[in-house]
Image (tube, rainbow, N blue to C red):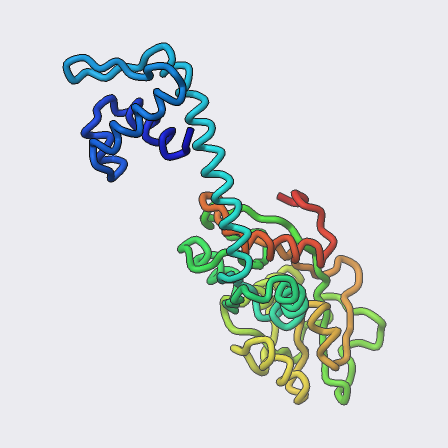
Length: 300
């Protein structure tokens, strides 16, 4: 008994017509008939009743059909699994991430992933969460690191919470500290010169929202930069900036935490709900969760 014979049998059982079955299988009708007769000889029973062009299953055919379908389904599953393993030797993963994470978390994760799967090409799209969500929904990314919660009206995404990160204030080491205390309040930022990210940047929205909640509008000396530019402006003494703790730790700048109700952001990993990520992307997700010590399924 051959898989090809079972495939021919299942197709003929479905369409109940030799010519249409042969067309569906892209084979000549005599070849189809020959394989069906060979299968019947192998099993020692007729599988179809043929009368004036009408094709019906015999009792033996009815008994074989569920098993044939299961065997074909299992074969297809095995084929896909083998292909997915082979894909980890080559292929591509498209990851989106905010610049702040590209400067802190992403390099370590990609280094670990590349060491494990050196044949996979890694493509990183750097941008704000709103832009990344749109690109992800449009099929331009496999995975995206985003800041949650998502805006109202955002596309349906599956998200896994990865970490909650404290935001801190960074200033140039040669400049006066923003406070004499070990920590400051959001209200202490009133009137202080600030370097601010461009519009659409998650950290800009978080910072301005917190300042307004404290009853004042922030004062910008420079605005419109990406992460590297903002850190450079702070280093030059143009003002302070509110940045994630992981970025601040690598910046070489003076770091001052917030006291009381701390400013935080929540980082999540997202993919489309309606499309399962490819195997290489799922493995990147696993490496990321392993790196952060997040249990599989946590925060779904």
